[in-house]
Image (cartoon, rainbow, N blue to C red; front, top):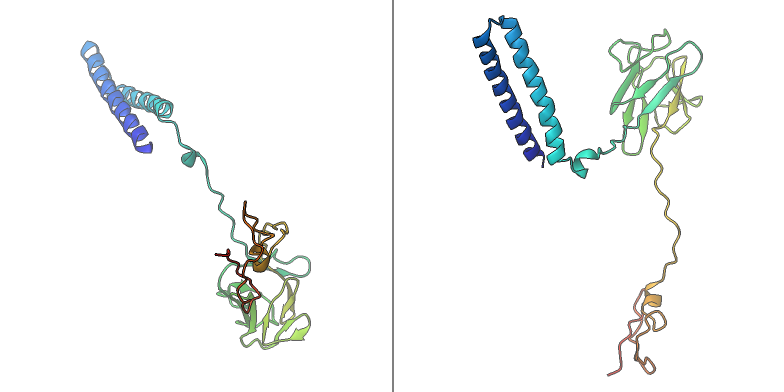
Length: 223
């Protein structure tokens, strides 16, 4: 459908441009026309043919449902470090798998404070979460007031590098749709005569095979 629409539009535009050039030449044979005016005539003809081509393309080959529907791309949820106190930066997104915190300008999270080492700590994103690690800060690293070497951060933890405290915010993830509880039958209930009634079937005197380890009974019709 898209190819047909573009083919029709291309033909209409080419025909329109050709008509503009021929019309401009015809006018020039009748009267002198400056070159800028000739160029303007051709450009106006091109724009007009383009508008007509677009309108006819949509009329004869309307967009399909797949073209009109735009999939919603979820925004990547990042964790954040929010400085505590007023007059500080709004926050630092942990948008990399390895984030270095320190006073050096090349650090991912630069904290310009005398108590912070040039490369003080790092946060590594793992499958289990965000791991906060001391990489040689002279004043140590703390989480919730306790000095740590490594710590797996949780929502609401207070991280301290030197005298600077930062709040850790876990990434916001969309809540999964909760399924309503449904009644479940065990295998033995599903295979029981009450659970599987058959028209005209008589299970009286049916032979039951021995019960297996899971407590499942397998029934068969009498021969």
